[in-house]
Image (tube, rainbow over all chains, first blue to last red; front, side, top):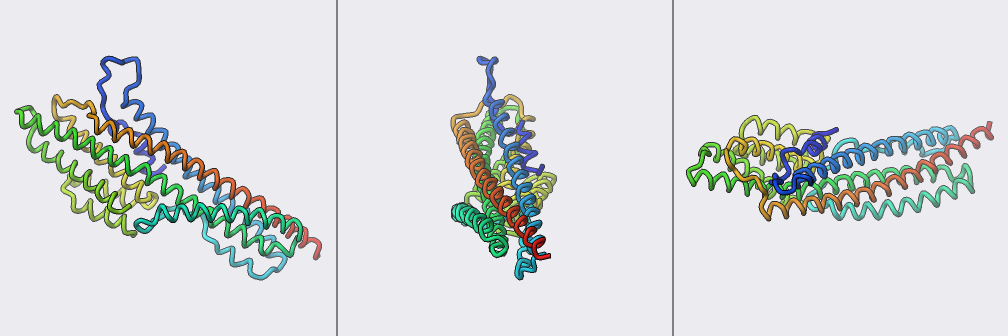
Amino acid sequence: MNNLEEQIQNPSEVVPEVVTESVEQEPSVREIGRERIDKIGAFFSRAKEGFKDKVRQTGQVISGAVGRVKELGIAGVETVMGAPEAGLRALEYGVGATAVAYEKSREAVSHVKNEVVRVKNEVLEQGASAVENGIRTVTDAKNTTMDFGERALYRAAERIAKPFVAFQARRLQELSARVEARLNAGGAAKREDLNEILNIVTQMKGLENLQNATQ
Amino acid sequence: MDEKRNKLKKFIEDSEIPADLKVKELAIVDDWDLSTPEIEAALAKLIAQEFDKKVASVPDIDLTPGKEVQESFSAYEREAKEAENDLTNDMKIVDDTLKAVREVSEAIQQVALEASLGAK
């Protein structure tokens, strides 16, 4: 489990506090929010791990087929052995390219799936003469699908992260204003505490601005 | 290092925050298991935790969320739910396509095996 997943699954201090004095028998917004964030973190983790496992498994099956085809002495199949394995680290995309690349990648998967079905019929009907093209087609399909899966995971993380940061920025601004008002009214708050709090709020706001500027 | 990750790193280095928090934030940015959106969410969580610790030391602060905060939380919940549904559909496409790839690969393996045995 990575840092984000751990943090999303332990959200006790990031959801809004709500007074529940009149509805004690019902879950508070805070509790609902905690449950929701737990579910998202667990879901994202499962999706990521499931994707990696399927890509690994498929890569092994293709390698097995390539091994058999090599025994036939067909030229060219060695090239597919150099096909990239599952992207097991985070992908990074150019600014503004994510949504467009995701859509293109989705279309590409639909195309390669049709190709895979077509080549299966060829292999079954034509036998050994169709295996070289078959290997190339399944390798291309695996790589295209891998690219799409990685982009889909990236896009989902992006869609979750943006409103999450916005929510936190609003919450911190609101609470810091209350701390400031209390201090100005002669409350127990200390000026140095407020300065530290305001620096943290500034950082959260800066993170939100940076996120919006780079999406 | 990619452009977005670089900007986040510089942003943290330039921020006026406690040194221990800065170290934790930079560790998140340097974690290559995380994509940049994951880093952004993790940083937001960490910053909010630090904030909550500071506010907890201030007595008598009303923590009830105002309308704007409630709305932004609802927007987050809504988008997260949609993203989850879309990712479920996308992973179904991935599963179906990879399953077809495995089936064809097994068919190729079988045909190649038969041809190999026939040639001997």
